[in-house]
Image (tube, rainbow, N blue to C red; front, side, top):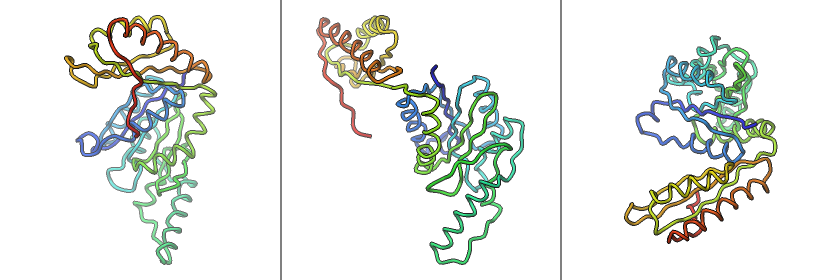
Length: 275
């Protein structure tokens, strides 16, 4: 059974175009490679009501997992946990484990700076206020812990918006849990570069190959103009083991390559730039 995921990115900076949503792209790629099915990516502002409404909508769609990023910090506009609590019709409370994590972090900061102590101000304690019955996730690189809670069989995971912190919590706490859910499911992909044939001519070819290979998904990405076409065909699948996944993609790749060449097109492996 495919594990489905939705991603909710929170932050006004994303909606006004000030910050590129690299967190969602990174998460979508990692989740897909692990064999999970990312169904939607949503962006919401730093507004409790909006966050709450979006979380309710996502829960009603019944994904297995909802991952949020952003809005866990100490400032006034960090409202993700409040929005989640409102959506779940519960309250925020100071979580003892989260409070201990934060206290320990500030004690270490004080030692590093040669200070006797750093005061746990209300803004700092705010990061320990989680929805009732939530569990904190340790933050190896920052102060604000992540969070996990379940509602109506949907696991809700909240991660910080700072990319290195988000990635660190994912790697340390979330990835092991996801691997237990997906088992040995494998994602496999390859890309084929196509020239000398327009995308409109490729459309029926893609339809036929996908019909003949129902486990494979093929997506065309134009890299040139219609009159001078250069197209990337991305071929992917998810299967229970690596050998099956590779065989499915290879079979589709051979078929589509042969058809394109009979139509006068040229093909070659498509190489993407390293991320």
